[in-house]
Length: 439
Ligand SMILES: Cc1ncc(COP(=O)(O)O)c(C=O)c1O
Image 1: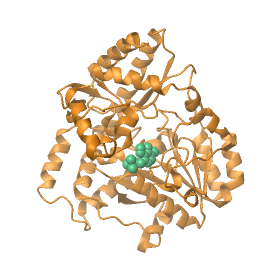
Image 2 (image 1 turned 180 degrees about the vertical axis):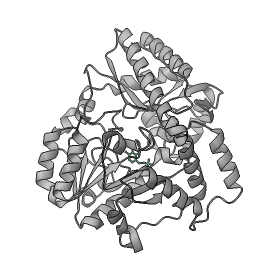
Image 3 (image 1 turned 60 degrees about the vertical axis):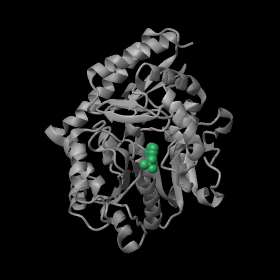
Image 4 (image 1 turned 30 degrees about the horizontal axis):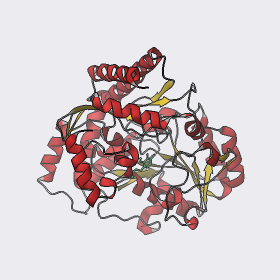
């Protein structure tokens, strides 16, 4: 631990809950004081004691261009001088919406929000309003923000609490959530064709939507089995439930068109957050025209003082233009970097005969699992076979070697266009050293 971080943590604990503003940044995740960061540049973060880290967390994926990218800095400086937020109609709002609709074939219209949670809340309300149905079908281990109705089975549990795979024990992940809030939430095992068919037979006709992450991104990185998401889409059509693809993590990350492009999907409704804002709070709900029309005239209500903040919209526009330039070179670059980093980690893991581990990734996202399994394919595998304490110890040691990842095995690492081959080599070296040193 660095001295200034420790003293800031001691001060922070007196005035901030857990010394931070989100549990994932504090002692619940770090096991003690986190490193307090002072600034970032490119692929690097610097802590308050001046130590430098190669950042593979990139603000949970909010920074596809890395830290303090000159185009973003220029945009913020230019636009802040013209006023930060008006809460009025804006030209840039139309421009960014045009960009998004042009880019995402399944999106006819968008509505801007600020965070993934907010966008999801509006999307779920819209699904219920559009279909007149109450039930939401979600999957074990999938996170769609901290809203009451879907904050169910989002955390890893001991295997004894999982229940039968055909009927997962439903567990809200917070106190203060009344049962009425999640009584219409159906939880299903993910990546399991049979479980999905069964759940649809039982609940499909009453379901407003089936909501899924395209790549399971809140239990490390778990890709969908071939054809699984397409089957989900077909079943939604069969039962008249909306197919809701949550691209908060994967949007403008895995491809310019997100998981929908990667897996050939046409969701009825989708939400984006994180990367789209290029570091500023920005999110949107998008979908087919007839579904999105539900939001018109407040039929399904969605308000927000900070929706479509002009500063964030300008940054979104800059981020998109930068990533899309030269025939989407930015997306090709982060994919190449992510795949290369994952391959390097696999090479290092193979060379270490003392630790059982696998590296899983999709394009720019990757995660290391300490496990004796050849592969982690779902939430139950994760809960039963992934050593999360070991991962946290591993990441804590990496901090001392100048590598930054989130210490929670449920999260993942990401590449940004500013990472370099030298960053990958330095990270692989540090990981090899830590594996050598670690008990
Ligand atoms: C798939 C998914 N949906 C929604 C959210 C919520 O986004 P936010 O943290 O911006 O509220 C997250 C956050 O991690 C997420 O991973």
